[in-house]
Amino acid sequence: MKKVKKIVLFIATIALTACNYSSKEDNSSNFGETGADGFVGNEKYTDYGENPFILTAEQPVSTFSIDADGASYANVRRFLNQGQMPPKEAVRIEELVNYFTFNCAEPQTGENVSIETEISSCPWNTQHHLLRIGIKGKTLDINALPASNYVFLIDVSGSMNSSDKLGILKAGFKAMTEHLTDNDRIAIVTYAGSAGVVLQSTAGNNKDIIRQAIDRLEAGGSTAGAAGINTAYEIAQQNFIEGGNNRIILGTDGDFNVGISSNKELIKLIEEKRDKGIYLTVLGVGTGNLNDSMMEQIADHGDGNYEYIDNADEIQKVFVNEKLKLYTVAKDCKNQITFNPSMVVSYRLIGYENRAMKNEDFEKDTVDAGDLGSSQTVTAVYELMLTDATVAQPYGTFEFRYKMPDETSSRLISKSIENGKQFIESASENQRFAAAVTAFGLILKQSEFKGEANKQMVRDLAANAVTFDPYGYRAKFLELLEKISD
Image 1: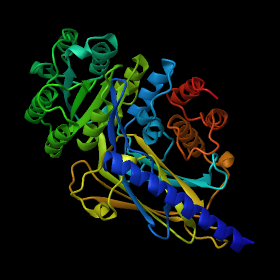
Image 2: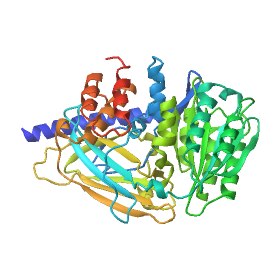
Image 3: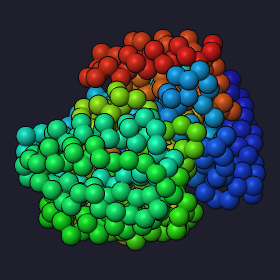
Image 4: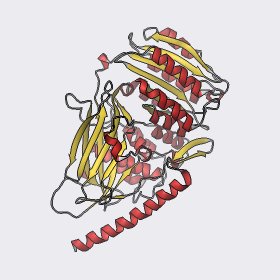
């Protein structure tokens, strides 16, 4: 009977995999390798499709860069709060999960990153299992942070002239100003028809001068984004702090229409700048003409992260509660999982569609990958089809490679994925909450893989996984969940 079951499972997997590979190939033929750039209304998103199931016997190794962004969750929330379902192109499941902080252990002495794994049953498909990969960046002492050299790069073009765009950015930057130290420095660059320097690099103890410069910002004109980017990098380089936190914070709706404006040209420009030791944070704002596609990609290619700010609470989250994320503790972070075909028939990485890497690039220190901030957690979820093996063996090996912020050679952390599967109900709170948000994403994305995922399932999983909730974001997730239909 076991042999028959195994054969049936294998045939079903081949059929499912073939179907999904066909779907992936169709998407590539229509849209190109990087997905489809397209408008939803007047907002621009990229459709990356969905990762298929992969047969372990044919391709046991899965390699991808981390994604530390949280923009998709806040953007999805904006749609739901307006009484609309978000366009599925706006739903990047890894960003929904990584919006939240998970209760992971601090790194061991000498490391800046810790890793963990866990396997449980899959709530939306009881024949499958979930593998959670957890990563955490070292928590720096908030009273002993390195000096920061910030350049606020602010879009003041005509399209930014509203309270939910320039207004919300001004409020955010002023909130951040309150937490600057005397050793920090800040400059403000704006761009509309051309780039201008509103405030030369100024010590953080001159808070009145900084606030006054922010208050004077007004919107009007066209959008020469590339000119602003060039000016911001020049100022950041001029005031570079060795061993410090050198970072540009770009606030925009992404509507670049003067000079370089295509995604490809902007990505090339950002890639030319990223090797200078200057990090990039991209803050998206507004409704109606948001260019999510461009902002997500330039953050990805510029050693940066992308967040979307839809309300005052998000200002508090990004600029105050989670300010440590602005301090990079690990760069060029790559994941590689080698599955054991004796234990895993097939696997599917949920999300991270535009973060896939060639297996051979995992050990190449010249290949760029995502960066991790202090105290930041990154989670990846795989859906697995397991064999009916009765002899306990590891499910595979998880390897994580990263560089210290001031180093050019990577270091390796490795962990065996041990036999320890359990029912989702008895899994850790980290596992249950990750499963809840993942199921939420599958529903919003109208995923062909969502199985039995539904609102009640998400509610049950998340409601029992809120013990660790430092700022109440998990509780607010439960409130947001009620805005989708059953």
